[in-house]
Image 1 (spheres, helix red, strand yellow):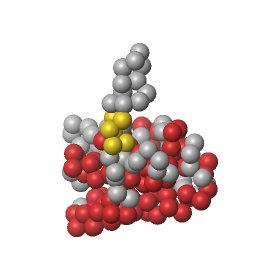
Image 2 (cartoon, rainbow, N blue to C red):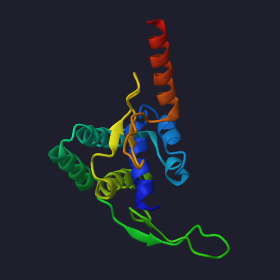
Image 3 (cartoon, rainbow, N blue to C red):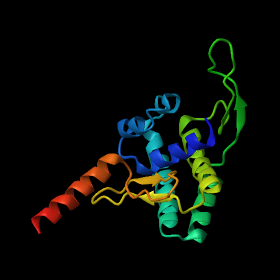
Length: 175
C-alpha cells in the first residue's frame, strides 16, 4: 500500500458503520487480508479508532488546526505504525514492493488502526487540512478528501450531488 491507500483506509473506517463485524468487513472489502482476520472482539477498538478519526476530520472541516494536531497525534500514539518493507504479492516473479504499518505477526485490528492513523496523518501532510470535507447532502455525513483542481467538492459522491441538485431543481419549479 502507499500513503494514498492508507488515507482511503482512514476515510473508510471514519465513514463505516462499525456496529457489526459484517459492516466492518464490508468497509474493508478492498483489504481482505485485514477484513478476513478481524473478530467481533476487535469492534470496540475499531469504534474508538473511528471516533478519533471523526474528531480529527471534524476539526479539519472546522479549520481547527490545534484539534487536528491533537487528535491525529493521539491516534498515532495509541496505534503507532511500525513500518516494514515487504515484497510479496508480485506477478511473474517480480516483487511487489510496498510498506506494511505493522509487524508480520500483528493482529489485523492493530494493523488497521495503525494504517488509519498513519493514513490520516500522511493525508494531512500531503494535502493540508482544507481539502477534507463532509458531504453537503441532507442526511449524509460522509467524510471525503477533495483532490480536485479547484477544491470545490461539496458532496461525497455523484449520487449525493445528483440527489441535492434534483431536489433544488424541483424546489425551484414549485415556486
